[in-house]
Image 1 (cartoon, one colour):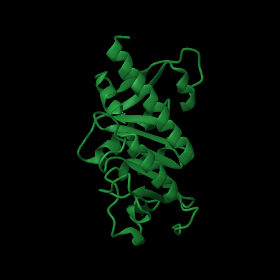
Image 2 (cartoon, rainbow, N blue to C red; image 1 turned 135 degrees about the vertical axis):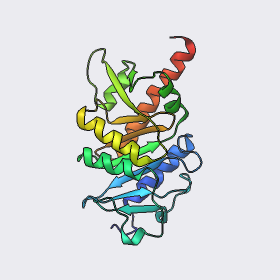
Image 3 (cartoon, helix red, strand yellow; image 1 turned 90 degrees about the vertical axis):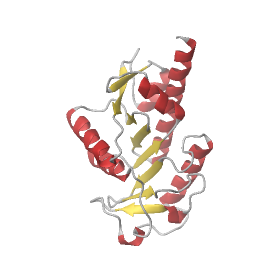
Image 4 (tube, rainbow, N blue to C red; image 1 turned 180 degrees about the horizontal axis):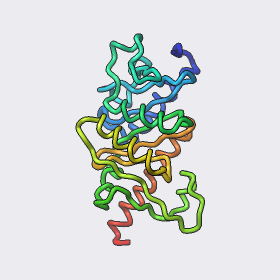
Length: 208
């Protein structure tokens, strides 16, 4: 566990959450952010907290086995904790996992009935690690379920059988999740993927 000081990783999550809240990506109490620690445990935003007004006490520490650490038992973890847990297991290099509920990330999930959404070959894909001329790239879409553990299980099954092209996934009519090797990279990924989604929504409205 990390003590509250200027290097506390929760401070970065607080600043990022406030920024995303101001962009309209984490309205109300929606969305969740986590950061993994050296021992394999991770801090995640607590359930039911406004992401524009987070305090250090608005986080829960989850140990490497997925259990709430004793010092956090008075705070309820995010409902999507199981998704963060499975992504950290599937991608050991990941040190941060961000999930937001933006308008565009919900709209684009309705652009196809398939389990993968083709992304336009934009230059911005380089920011997600896609380096190719006229790239053919997709982002996986998962069904939304009331039981989040079911979503996590489907993520585990799909990514165990098929590699992810980019470090991002969509949950239909729910939101987008990214994972990255650092909090800074995760923030960049969210901003890049949201740019791509805005382009897709705008292009469709123009008939492009």
